[in-house]
Length: 310
Image 1 (tube, rainbow, N blue to C red):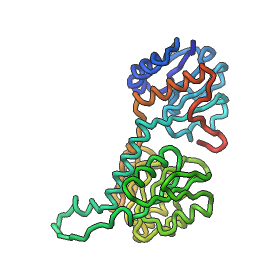
Image 2 (spheres, rainbow, N blue to C red):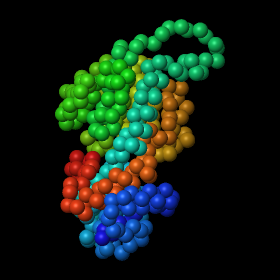
Image 3 (cartoon, rainbow, N blue to C red):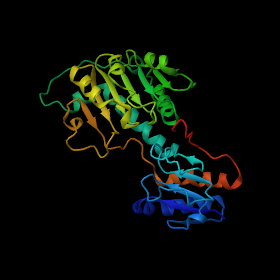
Image 4 (cartoon, rainbow, N blue to C red):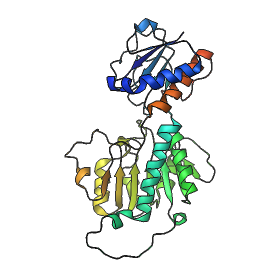
């Protein structure tokens, strides 16, 4: 019988207790699920990085840590964690939410909706936007979420270029990789979507040099991770007109401080880290399936490469 420790904040337990119980019951396993348990009895930890559990050393029979979040940058560097770490890849919740946010904001900028929604001078500009086939979109990051967004945008008719550190293949999408491929992906890009993980190798992917390669007036969308962007370089590019608008959902410090320049900048839209949220019902099924796999001796899903950082 697996012993499962739920290690997260109290409000999370209120959200997850019923869905996790239902999902674990559906596996047919006998199990014990609790928010407190002697460390030496714990087999699996359902984990939020901001929980009280930071030292994994006492958990000497631990089979796996199952992260509640897609991001694992606050866990991978923990040297006390020796058990396998799985990140949250929830196609129903995280994936669909990200697709909806990305496609919604790409269409918003593609169609120029802001001009029509906020038009205090009542100007009549009947210039039609180009069709989607004439508006290329570049996605940096072709993991599960990046691929889902690329497919959705391709389905709407946008030519999509995707870039990733390692080679990927995706039908209908121009896939590039490596340092040279990143330059090609950025050159002349008109809408750029950032969906890379937060690692030492991806920090400041959009720096001054990268922003200079974009088409003048390009749009930047960041629902990925705050450190992917050099904030000072982006603000300078917005002021110069090199970047026409930035819609940002993630930041180096969250909540975004009230005095941060992004709040007041006329070419910046701030959304409060809502692009892709873990939904308890669907996330519970992902967690339960991994525990079932662990007990059956099957490979766990969504394992993290600790060396790569994701």
